[in-house]
Every structure is written in structure tokens, then in C-alpha cells.
Length: 566
Ligand code: ATP
Ligand code: MG
Image (cartoon, rainbow, N blue to C red; front, side, top):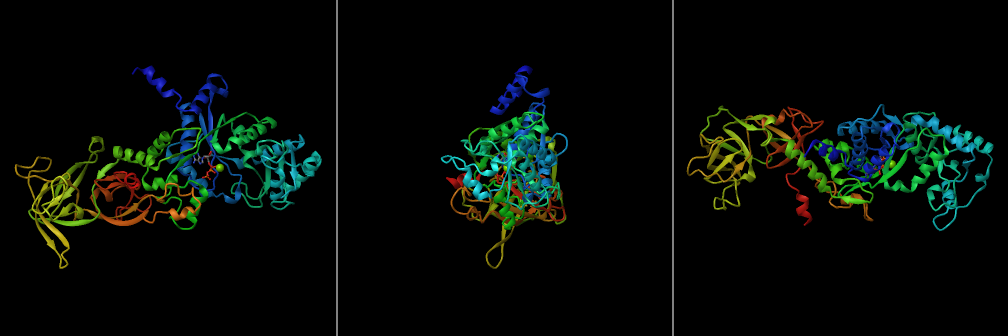
């Protein structure tokens, strides 16, 4: 492929939004050719995997077209919002590898401007203060089959409305008593156009503006204007806002805004086996069913991070899901595939024995240490080597020894009585003796190592059945392993009549111990490994230390859910 082919390849639009942006650029419709997108989370929860795809989309488009992506907190709902969420969201976006343009922005920093624009609409006769309570308003708004009913407030004078709105702002009305509404069209087929609410009263302090306001703009009255103020060129949201687009445009047409952004919609990312509603995730946290928003079982960005997912794997997943205009449900195994693939390529190999059986090497004197060298990764020499101390006492996994040596070599490729096995990265050993306690339980086995077999074929007549993992008893260390599985056993936990909590997987979390090779204690928090023959694990972000190693199961080596499903 030539250089020019490569260039075309890189810029070829891969989804309908890229096509739109390229058309807009070609037709000179983008001011200064600077594509500006934004990611506008409401700080009322942690980001989840669905948000991650939206982040990859918005920041990804800005990257692709050398534009900018703003991070803007859509903080128009003070009662549900908190600073911890603001901090967590920023941390998550940075961790995913994206950088927003300029400072973090807040819808609340435009409240003065929104207020001015509300006055503007009132003066133009396009907004009025309505004294109906929510129930009556809903009734009078009608529905698809029932026309809206005009009330007296709708016919009030501009002066009256200005005075009433001032009373609203000054706190003279209670919550729910009055609202400011746009005067658009009570007969519109689009319910969003039937005089939508612009401002409502909320007598709660705001995390950014304190006690300055007791009236707060609605999402609809805020979003497009925020985009206009920031010079956003392509405002991308999920499909449920499609019916709000005429309203988004109505505000831009009827207000003296500095720019005219356009809203586009794409399908939200739905994943089976998880819930991605912030309200439901919050319930799991509030009811103590998980340890927090960043519990490794949570589909939150911080949960996935703690579980050992990498930014690259989440970005890869977003790419696999793609951008579409129709709703669908992505399979959770796609996400798991993305992380398994990444770790298979990038994670260092290490050995951990989960269910230890002591092996005494009878022909190695006590105190002798032979240092074996193994590659950190079979196909990545640049990742270097690790040292494995081979000592008189070792641990292998109980499942790797069976007394019965009549088992076929094909079926049981592990150690049996009187036979040979290779220890990964080390010697071939031969079983000599099995020691049991009074209950007949095997407590240790004794073996002999075959000199000259490290990295070499064994001599004639020595036929190891396979290769097993091991760890020095004297030089290894005990570690805590946190074994996680999917949080829900049902593929659509929140789509039935029943409460989604009934579908929680009772086996989603177990703690166990393992004996790990010395290098693992030295791992840095968040470092991922493949524990050979066991799975992918990550050193816990908070609890791991070299004195007390703690590893979380990221994902098994194989997709066990696929076989369960069959
Ligand atoms: P939730 O339903 O979890 O409360 P939300 O849409 O209310 O989500 P916001 O904080 O408003 O949460 O979302 C910020 C941005 O992320 C919005 O632009 C929204 O469209 C996008 N987003 C939220 N959920 C998804 C999803 N599942 N897939 C894709 N984008 C999403
Ligand atoms: Mg929202």
C-alpha cells in the first residue's frame, strides 16, 4: 500500500457522523474549519460503559478532524449533583486517554446568560410565567389525540410576565408553584413544542453557584444555548433527544445566540448482562450491594479500571460497537473479548498457585536456590525476563497431580504417580512418593528433578506428560485473590417486570488465596498479568502492596459464559 492509500484509509468516514462532518467541512460550513464537539455529563453519578462510548465518539471525532472537544458538566439539576461525581468524571476521561479543550466547563457558569435570554423571550412575547402545578399542566398540555388547552396565564402582558419572573427569581414562590414556559404551540404534534418549561423553582443550593439562584433552567432551555456559547459545531446526543431537536432549533432561532450548532443523534450503547442507568447503579451502591461506584463488578469506567480493564480495551470496544442510528444490544462478551485480547498481547506472564500442594525436591539440598529465567511474555522479548527461584520446597496446584497413573496421557497432561512433568520455565521432575495424613488426604508429594532439562529436551525415556505452573514455597509469597464474575446472571436484568436486583449473581465475588512468584509482590498497583493457566489478574489499585499483595480477576482465559449459554 502506498503512502497516499494510507492517508485515504485514515480519513475515510467510518460512520454517518463522520460523513456529515466531512460534508460540512467540504461545504465550508464549519467556522475556521474547526470541528468542535462536547461531552456533556450530568454530575449525578459515575460514568459507565455507555458514557465511555460517547466519550470515544466525541473526543475521537475531535482528534480525527484536529478539532476540539469540550468537557461540560450539564449541571442544571442541583439536588442530584455532587462534587465527587465531577472529580470522578474528569479522572475517568483522562484515564481513557482524552484531553478536553481548555478548562472544564459548567452549564451553571452560563446561568446569568440564560437568565438574560429568558428575559429576552418574555419581552418578545415568547415566554410566560405559568401558575399551573405539574399535574394540571400535564392535563392541559393534552396528548397526541387531545389538543392543548390555553390558560389565562398564556395571554398575560409582557409587563406582567416580567414582574412575575422577577418574583420567581427573588424566591417569592415556592417549588412547584410556578414555571416559566416558552409560548410556542399548544397544538403541535410534537409534545416537546407544547410550551415547554424553561425555568423551574428549586430552593436548594447548587454545588457551583451556591445560593445565588432558586430558579434553574430545564435541560432543553440550556443545552443548545450552551453549545452555541461554546461554538460547538456538532452536538451529538442519544436518540431519545431526536424529538427535542425542533425545540433545540427553536431556541437557537429565537435567541440572539453567537453561533448555530446542529444536533445529531446516535443510538445509545446497550450491553447485555449489565444495567447502565445511573439511577440503578446508584441503587446498587446505596444499598451496599457493591462496595462502591468503582466496585470491580460495576460497568462504570472506574469499576472496569479497578477490575483491570485498560483504556485501550475500552476504546477498542467502542470501536467494535460502532456508531449507529438504530438501537441494538451489544453482547457483553464483546467487551470481554476486547480486554482479553489486549491483555493477551500486552500483559506479562506470571505464576500463581491457587490451590497449593507442596512438592519436595528430594535431590535439591535445603537452602539451595537455582535461579531460573523466564520470559515475561512469550512473544514480546522487549518486556524482558523474570527470575524464578527453584528451591527444595515448591507448590503446584492440587489439580495438577493425580495418583492414578492409568489415566490416559492424552486426557491428563499433568503429573501422576511415578511419572514426569515439566515445570514451566524450569526442570522436568519425576514423582517418587506421595505423603498423606491420617484422613488419607495428600499433604505433600516428593519428586526428583532431572538435571540438564532446563530449556532442553529430556533424555531418552523421560516423557513428561505436559507443563504445569509452580512457585517456590520459600521464595514465593501469599496473595489475596479477589475473584469476580458478572454481576447479573440474566442477560436483560432490567427489562422485565421484576426488580432487576433479583437477577444479581450470588457468585459474583469470592475471596481466595494464592501462592505467587516473587515478582508479583513487586507489581505496581493496576499492573495487569496473565497468571499462567489461570486467568488475567490486576494488582488492586488501592489495596495491593508488596507486603500484602492483592490481585483482582480481570477475566478468565476463555469465555465460560458462552459455553454456559449453550
Ligand atoms: P443515564 O441514563 O445513565 O443517567 P444520561 O444520558 O442521563 O445517562 P448524562 O450524564 O446526561 O447521562 O450523559 C452524558 C452523555 O453521555 C450524553 O451525551 C449521553 O447522550 C451520553 N450517554 C449516556 N448514556 C449513554 C449510552 N448508554 N450510550 C451512549 N451514550 C450515552
Ligand atoms: Mg442525561
